[in-house]
Length: 305
Image 1: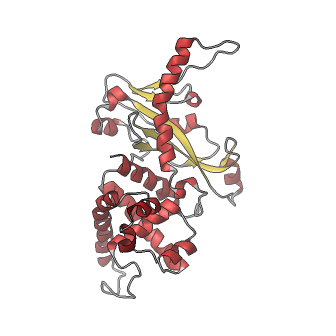
Image 2: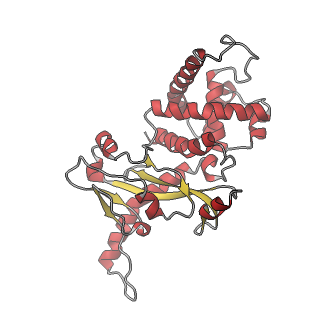
């Protein structure tokens, strides 16, 4: 059985299993505990409640540290619930129950730690610029990323979720990051796999209104033709048909690629979590579907600060 005291004494293994160092774990721990206690307080005033606090069997996850370890390990490794239950001496049904209990709490804890990216459709980027005013000069980087999912039973979904690029059924999100590190500042809504990156970005209805000069947004050639209010779209130069780029243009493209690779590094960091990189096993469940990539982008921001 995996427990916090046994694992914390081996920092390298702890980091590989949870994706975080003991120091990052400690930073998140207080926020997780506060978020969980808030949920418990709300339950006390539920009119349907019939039992006092503490009733029922003692939990196998005895400490707050074990509870946080349980859910961080799940997000990092994304094992079958049967296997996850074995690691913590729980039945498969109990493991399933606690995963669905703790995922929203971890999501809220990252919000308390101010590590969650903006994720409300139609909300402008003004709040991000206000928090990081240096982005007016540095700009932003953007790209789309796809997550594999199981073949849906719904006929319409089978067609709309199929990605011709990946040759399988996927779900797509648009990310915006800083150009000087891998912090994910904006996470777009989850969209169908057959939606083009350009259309996915345009449907986010982004805008910047409180800045005099447009903020640069670096994208790849797949976003050519994108027009967003308050943003200056920067893309590499495309080779003309039947001609070659000049040495200066090649040099400029090379320099731009060295900067834009940051967003690729951010996506790589997000996909170190098997909950994002592997096929979505619980697409039918709203909690799992909405939280996994939001959680991982938030925990990546925890690492980059």
